[in-house]
Length: 380
Image (cartoon, rainbow, N blue to C red):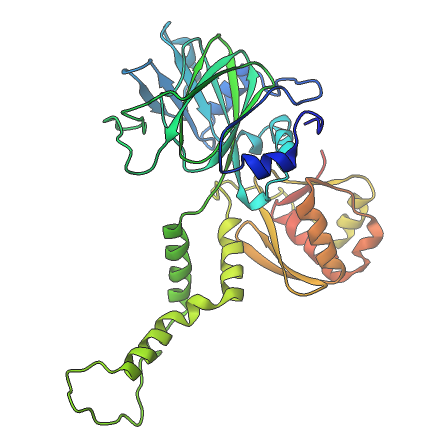
């Protein structure tokens, strides 16, 4: 995005998680990165999550993918919308859209969902629990925004779609190709295609709930506990009333229940692993043949490394020259040159690595590990 057309600092200060913002075409020469036929092809693949929504207000129906190619030919004149998740994991041109939003931490990024709709197509008024940037790729779409909603907001009785029973329009915009609409969590919205071949790219950002964090962290702690770790009260004094749970006993019990919860280093390690788990772990991205040290030196001399768009990378610093790298749900301690290399991998999608850099054994081991698990690969 052109910095002259979009002020990131002002956006973060005034809009992020606060209020919607319409950003009129901030790109330097917008080009729709995906053809409708390519999107339809992805929706036919078994490893790609997709949905087909047919009908209009009051009569929406949803089908889960994968879809048969013949299904598209059999659609009638009624409006319909195709939604395909995580297209950034399969189409490099769609992955490139994320570059413009790297001012948001990588661990917040969920995926890029792409929708295609015929005239009048949409999925009805709804709200999301995450931030989203809606990029208009082709055609026009009218977006109506309503009030802030929560779990108590009444929904229509629909088995597949979470549609709002009440939608009070507060704002309305028509987006042209290249326009972007940012919508914070909880804001009701409804988008309707004004043309055939209407395509929208939805960049969603994860926001873990308190319940998710508490459940995940405590389950992680429970996995490490044993039946032998029990309450003990040596030198137990006599009590005047045996029915009392004394303050001393409560203090011991409370300490047993909370000590692990307050372990910040342990929490950081757990959350790094938790937040980098692959969205679709069943997909195997490993190369057909693993490479060795000799292959690595030769291949580094002939090409750049690129991150797999399906891989998730983050890190937590551990002192001046050390960090804990998280990749696809596992943690890798890195120090010295390997830590600097890990930071570079996390910072950008494409990485030029000098062959001389693998003279450092931990750096070479890190690269080999990431390549052989499919987290990074040589370009082409």
